[in-house]
Amino acid sequence: MTNEARAFICPVCGVPSKSDVHGTVVQYDPENGPPAEFAFLQCTHGKCQAPIVQVREDYGDGFEDDAPGIFYPSKRRLNFAVPRELRDEFEEALTCFEAKAYRATLVMVRRTLEGTCKDQGAGKRTLAENLRELQTQGKIDGLLADWADLLRVVGNKGAHFTGEAVSAQDAKDALDFAEAFLDHLYVLRARFDEFKSRQSKKANP
Image 1 (cartoon, rainbow, N blue to C red):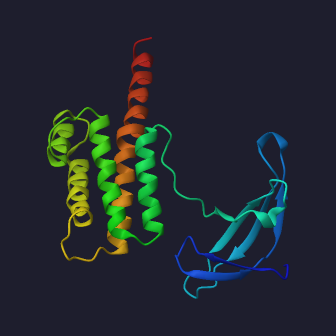
Image 2 (cartoon, rainbow, N blue to C red):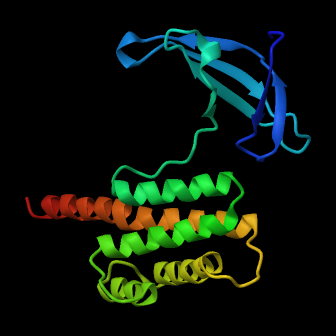
């Protein structure tokens, strides 16, 4: 353990924390970027105590010149099969959630749904109509349609003034269901189609 201490916002519990540096590891591969220093910390919040790994890079002026980022726990990422525009919308929703801007989180989740409908070829006037069109086309089943419609309704709480508070749990649930919605449309459907194709070739060589 070093004598250095660092302050940070815990990515697990979201509470400001300060931790001694319990050790560092420096990694350098010239083909993959500048030297990187990984520091091992721990959240000091009583109910959390999560292990944290910070990373700083040396661009020529030392590690101290670089603002540290969180390497672990890593930020959740969508599969690259999801179109970049939709990944950007979802990642902005994550940024809002991490900043405790829960109404803004719901707005970005709603935008993600709207963008998904457009990308999937639904061209109706409202989000509700577009979701029904995706269901009619067979791109989402009854359960996913229910999820998406609930996300739409919850998203209205962020987009329009209702006087209702938006809880962290509501925002987190919206993110989780939006991620599952995108994963179904862009990842699992493609994998299932590939699976069916392989099985068909085996049955009819």
